[in-house]
Amino acid sequence: MRVVRAEERYRGGDPSAGIESWHALSFGRFYDPDNLRFGAVIACNEERLAPGAGFGEHPHSHTEIVTWVAEGELTHRDSAGHSTVVGAGDVQRLSAAAGVRHVERNDAELPLVFVQMWLAPLEPGGEPGYEIVRGIADSTPYALPQAGAMLHVRRLRAGERAAVPDAAFVYVHVVRGRVRLDGEELGPGDSARVTDAKGLDVTGLDAAAAAGTETTGGPVAEVLLWELSGRS
Image (tube, rainbow, N blue to C red; front, side):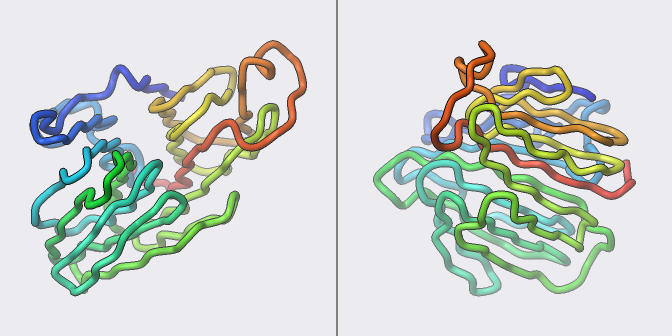
């Protein structure tokens, strides 16, 4: 298991334009030949957009783009005619296929925070596709057959355990809160890349749980887990 801490990510974006970006894998001008991809995952970016900020129309091709909003609302428009507002708890997928252009903006009055994950498709080309799933429930998997992948969203209470999928590759990203995975404590923005995952679980933590005290209440952590097929 390789852990990448939040502070180890590459920093990008344009703060003067209200855009702050953190990249867990090589992205744009940030190139590391030993950090190009993990399984089908080729990018995991945390984006923070101030009100009114955004990314103007830009192209994509041969990429599966999955977006998870942590705070605020993301306005999406693309050249295939889709225009949507993505809120916290929604899963958005854009299949770029042979080519598509889109715009991503924060048109709301509050800051926007989202995690965007890019996956390599099993086959290049084809027609662009779009899907949004509103308010996906905890532990409900989201299949991405185009990339041979499955996304598991877990919202964990303190001390609650959730099974990590047994898979050739599992990519874990902590959106909020703290968790323990195979003896490692992970916090917001931390990620873990697990090869040949088997029999693992992830546990929600807070101060009381870390001290060994049982607590009750709502979720203390939100985690995204990608179950990936055996491609490196």
